[in-house]
Length: 225
Image (cartoon, rainbow, N blue to C red; front, side, top):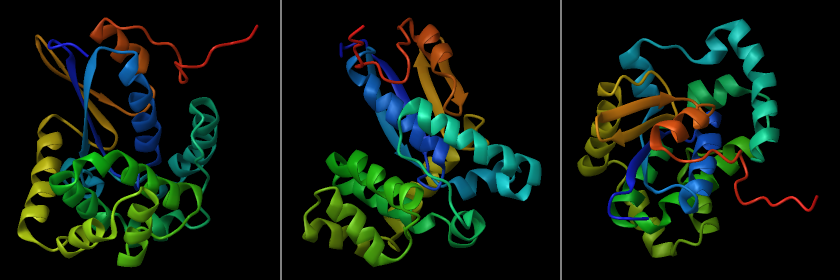
């Protein structure tokens, strides 16, 4: 990474499976693209409300399509994502507010653990269909990401603190101001201004605007053929 590296922000919510796909690809490309990757946990529920968008399972045909599309994408991007038996309860009724506040607290006080805890939460909810709301679940996710117990406990105590709530709210408002209507939203900071991309399938376009090379979903893969 050089002093002139392109700043790339990914605004994500762990309740969003497409966010997981985009997150993993951008993390893989840190050593391939000249970029400064910034992880920005936000609240998808707030984005949907402000933009007037609706969850896929609220539109029957969209929900049916997403089931097939997620498996295709999981195979293509080599991310261990599985379908949920009860996505409405997990995604809509229980939601992700506490998980995103937890990640916000980690970002504020222990940012070196943000990537691994985010991945651990995605693994719980989208690989194992495990809870990401209760304190015990959040603790286990962070523990699995090698955070110290004392650091985890501190972040759990901060979930209802004004600083954490306000930071998550501001981050969500910030991406909405960019024009976001869902997650993931990726912002590329070019010389001519920020460029917004939505979803996990815009990487060839992102590479082009960054003047980098798209090498597919697994840039470190070397064929033996």
